[in-house]
Image (cartoon, rainbow over all chains, first blue to last red; front, side, top):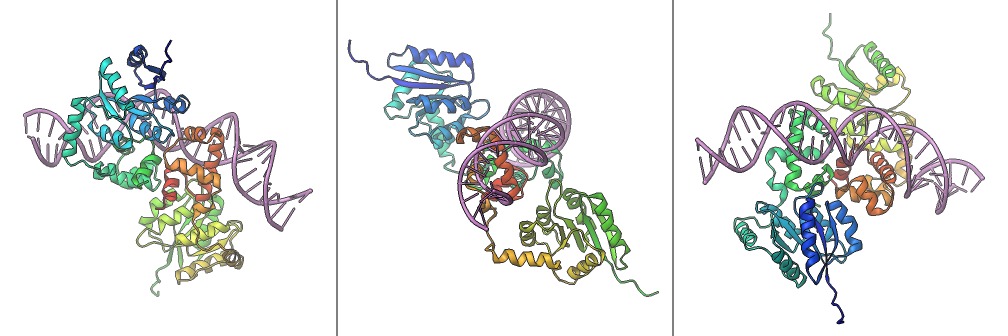
Length: 213
Length: 213
DNA sequence: TCGACCTTCGGCAGAATTGCCGACTGTCAG
DNA sequence: CTGACAGTCGGCAATTCTGCCGAAGGTCGA
């Protein structure tokens, strides 16, 4: 027998169990690929990835809890860190930039086909940046539309920035609502919107991003 | 009758109901003083003080919820803001500096005697900075011991600073404990100590102070 | 006019935080 | 050796936050 060349090791992060197993199947059936892990959340994956040390990670961008963008940020801090291919739906234009900025290597549109997936895996493994043509088009379109490298905080509405100001001073929802003169519920809603826009999941994270860290 | 000269208006912030009423009694019996409010917490006081607009505030330094130091910080942002006399026990050396830095005008040691209290009130009203001799001695002593104007964050132990680092990145207790390799409980304890040293009551507040706002 | 936001408000459940209590070990200075 | 800290760990209760749902009125531009 010939010596088998080292396969590309792959980890999968996808919350939908059906799609996850489907992806795993595609990878497993490829001769020179090996799936070393499949996770339903960013948190689980971040815990296991350092041990598994895969070459490539396939990551859904919409994850419960920590989202894909944040997961990319943390994963690229690993040494060495895997190449990351995001799985996304066509609407997620702004996620694309952030993931790219965070260190992702490529994108695939869902639903993803086996040949495309495997081609993308080999592409990133060879140093490429695979994107489906529709994603690539969206990327250049958006780059044309003056979206170079602006601060996420700037995308917050005036009211949201005002609320974030209070958060940064350490005010609670209740205190903030009293200061501004709106209901607790409204503060709650604004903060939800802030979290979504900044892609964070806690006040401390929002404040850190706001104060420019 | 002669025209009565405008009395010194006084507000009291003291969580112990007995002491609070005792203070109120002392003030009420003074001919040229008038107690316009007495509160059990910083939060209540901060809500009412802008309306009452007292000349002098007597504030306990140990309050439930928001502590006296933070309350001073917020109160001096009012326009115009009252002169503030802190009521403190002899151990609170570090609180003294912070309250002074925050804008308090004077100190009284508990238990406080009527004559001293009224003298202090008139003193601050006249632009003075009343302190009992024992407090004044403590102040100069501590100033001698190289405590000029250092950052509160510097007083945190190395471990505490490390933990605060994770807080600033938005990590939860659980995530932090996993990153460092200690238990959730220990992270919890460290954070409690951090809050006490920084005189804050939430992560966002701690992060804001840490990032220098 | 229609859609896309912004702003406002509410409920509910699960998760996380915070405060306060206790304990034990080790180190280091006085 | 004693006392003061730093660091570790645990439990418990109350509060707060977070996520997800729904709704409604306003503005503004296509």
